[in-house]
Image (tube, rainbow, N blue to C red; front, side, top):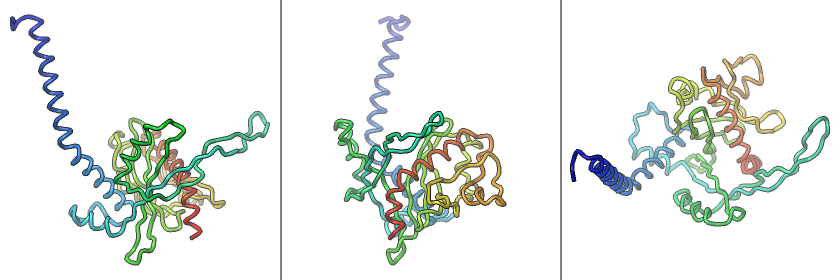
Length: 271
């Protein structure tokens, strides 16, 4: 074939692309297990940060971090139960009720988090109405086994990406102990400031419940929190400067995730 012909150029390009694709696929399959293990360890490290067992500035190696996690973190897989719940609504001055699907319970299972990906794959093969939904929760315990903190995964949309992190609560399940984010693609210096340890340091001590016990989450204020205003001091942190959409997204999904876990939290507040 004439090397200067269009046919040769096209054939050569297709061949190179095909070989590259095969090589990349083989490389990914070779290292898939290592990639998954590293992602899991990164999440475990962030759980340790959220519950106060590890400071980023601490010089700890991977073995030490794994030892901390295995010794003081208890993982739980919960089965999520949803039902239609009648809620009051008001439209045009007329009050009525409307059925809304809500989480009504989270039941502890015997499943391990390591097995959850496979379980979810099997559930996805079932008809939509028969698929089970699962959630994870982490308990930090002390040497005697008493609860020091609870931790839940949080996630939701910002401006450019889905943000993933962990939110830890004190044993009262009403007060924030810590927060961390481990994956997102928000703009550095703007929405990416969710990674700023000083900003994250505003969260501990904030209440996620109002005086009536309703979930209000933690709200990102547009501007700086006024500590002389009781509500702001109790329930708000500074917004992310120049990142209104990311700030609103964090406010929204933190509240939504807390509401999802509230049936589980209610049971443990009474213990």
